[in-house]
Picture 1 (tube, rainbow, N blue to C red):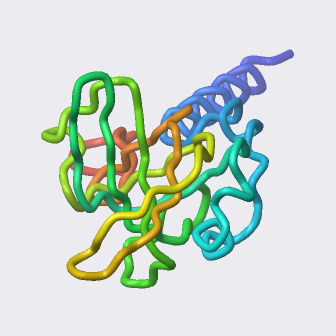
Picture 2 (spheres, rainbow, N blue to C red; picture 1 turned 180 degrees about the horizontal axis):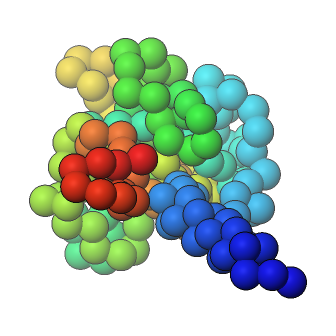
Length: 164
């Protein structure tokens, strides 16, 4: 094997490694997903899907921290390329994300885009204003917080002030 082939191989490995770091949900978590129906179906019949694992994307509406649990209220958004939610005004509803791990509201503020893989554990009805609303409830397996600007958290630069 000549030096050029070795260098190209090394470059390919580095590019793949950077891509993997910038990717959203791990392949291990994605392999656990068993819910492939629409969010609307989940919202209409959450009890039917209890115990299945879903991958959902959205925008944080609020965060509540109590002893032993953090709860996120999330506005569902469709996921674009890969696993990143599209930040637009097209939503099919809301869902709750629960985690036994502390998730600081300063790190997960309102408006943050997330993707979550988690077990569907049922539903909970709460009011939005004066209207009762049924939230599907997801127990976190893996959660990805997306950067606000949509760019990966690394850049590869050559020269002065040039990036690609």
